[in-house]
Amino acid sequence: MKKKSVERRYVLIGVCFLLPAVAAYLVFMAYPLCRTAYLSFSSWSGFGEVVLNGVKNYQDLFADKTFWSSLGNTLYFAVFSGIISVVLGVLTAWLILYMRKMEGQVFRTVLFAPNMIAPTITGLLFLFVFTEDIGLLNNILKAVGLEEWTTAWLANMNTVKPTVVIVQTWRQFGLTMILCFAGLQGISNELIESARLDGAGDGRIFTRILLPLIKPQIELATMFTLLNGLKIYDSVVSLTGGGPSRQTVVLPMWIIENAFTYSNFGYASAMCIAFIIVVLIFNIVLRTVFRGENYEY
Image (tube, rainbow, N blue to C red):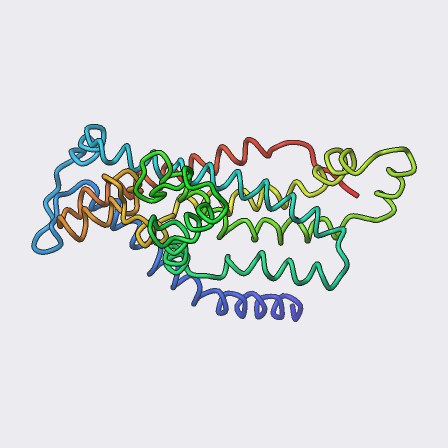
């Protein structure tokens, strides 16, 4: 009887500790999500009465060219920056693994530092790199005799999207490097030495032993980078403002513009729900891709 009383007491204490977190989730996550879903079936300017209009907002989505182009831009930035970030992060983690302790710490700190910089600041920093007249990149190209390669990187429709991908990759690949390096450190040295004794080179050790063993870290890093790419907003606003000719407008920009510029909160809410569905699909695809055998060491 006394044992049950103690167990009940610990359960009660646990519930008390959970209540603030649950309350915060309900107030700041669940309620806004439900409210957004409700508004997506309405026409509301932000003031006055909410007028329900059925599925009209969702029908308008299919005819909205800007919605589809902004969704395409968002997926473009998310996929390409995510893939490049993961590849660079894994490779740099592997290279740092063979450095001495002091040099490795310095490189890890330097490479991870961009991840701690606010996206808006990142965009402003790279304005000084890619601006046509005073940009660092064009001046370097001129200095080494490659003036014909100079261009308006942020105004040229052929280069602006890859430029945004480069900026996003620079900011986030350090996270992949840290996660994968932590996984590589946990691999037994005896396992690697045994492979070397069997005649395996560095490349074969990396592809056949190290990569499979850090698969959970790669999966986590891929999810982080892709989801960060889908949320891209601040860096694009500060870097291009959606230009040139709205070629880099991303979905969060179009949602905010409809809500706070055009006062069309119902339509903006419908786009939010559509965006949430896209994110869920991404998660399902990632789970499917990374589903498979587990390796132990």
